[in-house]
Image (cartoon, rainbow, N blue to C red; front, side, top):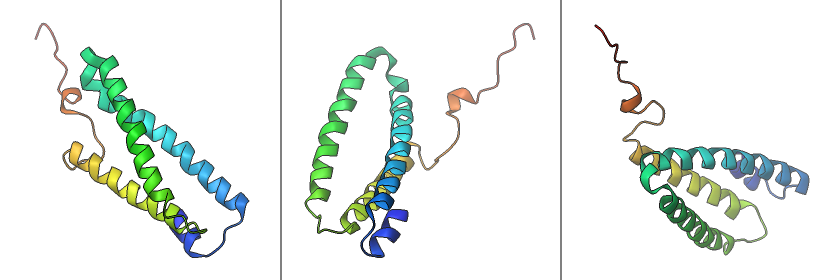
Length: 119
C-alpha cells in the first residue's frame, strides 16, 4: 500500500523510490524462496524436474506479466503501484486456494501426536 500512496501523491524523488523498491525486492526474495521450498516439499522424488518446471513457469510468467505492466508506464508510479497491488492480491488468492483457506499453520502431517513406543 505504500507504493499506491506514494504513486497517488505525485512525482516521487528518486531516493524515496529507490529505498521503497529496495525494501520490496528484499522481502520478495525472502518470501519467494520460502514459498518455493514449501511448494517443492511433496515433490522430493522428482525434485530436479519440479525445480526446472517451476523455474520455467516463474521466468516466462514473470516476463509476460512484467511486460504487460511495463507497457502501461506513463511517467508516474501509478502503473507500477497498481501492478504490485494486483500481483500481491493474486498471490494471496493463490496461497489461500492452495492452503484451503488457511494462511498460517502446520501441515496435518506435522501436527500428529508423537508415537511413544512401549506404551
